[in-house]
Image (cartoon, rainbow, N blue to C red; front, side, top):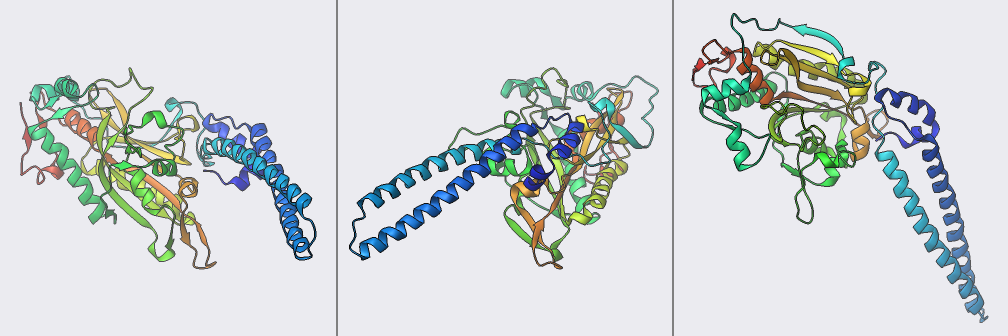
Length: 425
């Protein structure tokens, strides 16, 4: 959530910056609602003061033995008007909150302009796309040929965009998770964390998924309603909601493996083949909470931690900066890591690493105590996939395939696979 003070004092400037995201800030409505709020608050305060004076006068007149009937009637009328104003003020506040809660984060000044992913700016590449002396196939054909990846059975027991994995491919999927967790905890300094896979609406509001992206969530039918997490970012970042941490605790770095659940509303017809875009998938998520002065350096380091996974797996990738039109609702700046997929003959996103600055922290009131001022201040939050496990599996299968339909196991994963060097049909 943006700073309400900035929205009041610099709405036009914020509107110009938000336009980079393709968002139109309704400055007139924002100012109109805020003016109504201030006017009603002033009226309410005046009426409350008048009621207090009348109540005091009633007491004084009673003590003096005077008639107070007319004054009590007048006071009752004031109370009725106060109730009316309070109702009007609540309605205006709800409308103003709804407007403010729907405003995305302001993009950082280094975010390039653009309307879609076609306008993202490439920063660097690592390694060259895998060259084959045969025609490579995609992971769906490979998995089917191995007899270890079954989309039809998954559709029978659940529906589309799910998969059943078995034997060595299921083990390779698990090996990737273990490898990523070990790397981030032993070399990158993250604390491994386990969290619930269900959260409440407050948690989704805190990280920015609600109210804007309600249709993308899977929600339970009970009372109270819970939501299946779309990413570990939600429960892990919310560990610090309504909290104040000491400066000595910073930076706070968590790594967390969870399944993720997304309805993928509005994506029908896109990436329907295979494991690229599913309703259920696994991720190893990196989350950091840092001092505001440290967040931009933290973004570079966090991105590097995700890149290390791809380098150790020897998978060709590139890093791009998302343009304004492709930037997420809560993000001030995002780097996407895109891994090379021979089966699609293109780079595809496997990790998004973002700095949210104070946007999420303000929504959830996650703060740190500044040792110099002694006062609590909003933290800066960051996260990134380290990595998306299903897409990492897809990339491994396609980049490490041979002409016989087998998949070579990368050296770094062989200990996790009991020494197995190749998965064969």
